[in-house]
Length: 327
Image 1 (cartoon, rainbow, N blue to C red):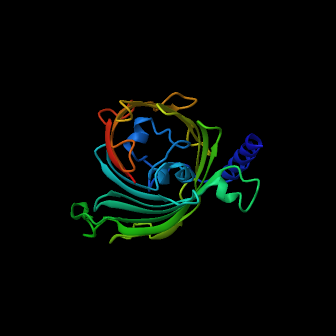
Image 2 (cartoon, one colour):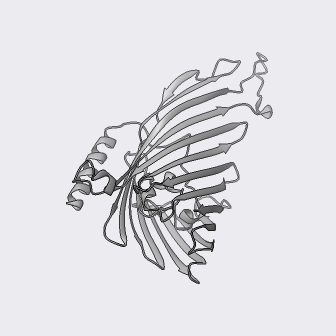
Image 3 (tube, helix red, strand yellow):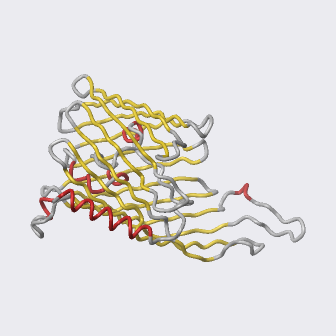
């Protein structure tokens, strides 16, 4: 029953997403991945994310947290150009549902973006109160998107003929939804699916003195889908993700990650790998570690580090540091 339902969902979702003809190359509000633990495993987290990072990777897996509350802080600098910061909070209720709040901020005066995330997850046990056929946890993110640009004082370009400034200034606001599911496949194995931005709309408003700015216009974010499988055991975790391309101008991305716990869970070591599935291009390698304070107590603090090795962007390897608080 579970396998049949999963195949039906995948088929329907893929068909609906292929009906969208917009480009799947995202230019704004990029999803760079957050959390050094997740990125140390190559970004393969769709089925196994358990902390406040679930808001990013799969909101439905928030129901699997072993703690009532989780807080996550993360900051990363991408290619020495943009700094991304993430704060997430999630709360698991007595009915095994979960709710979360997240903030993402990136950029500077030249271009800044803010995303506010409101997240909800409903466990299969709770959903069975309404349908005896419920077999999975369901999650949804409501994302509110804000941007401003062109406010940097060094961005002026004066036209020598007219004396007018070419610098474009403006702002944007909008929203998007993510839909997700998580299916336990036994005591250790898990399946996850996330459909990103099936509904979205952003209104842009730009201007400059020369009148060459685009003015007011609206557009949506490209739709994305990620499918994941993972195994979570006492000493180790293993995960496999596929970022499924829904358009001809992007490639499928394959991600693989593993984690092993040492010294009674005081320390973890991680490794990950990703590449374009068919072409083998865009390879990334990652290694990471994590340190847990009071790992078996009610309160736990985790400090995680990851180093991501790029093969196409020379001298732009990325060091990631994040902190989690579980209560």
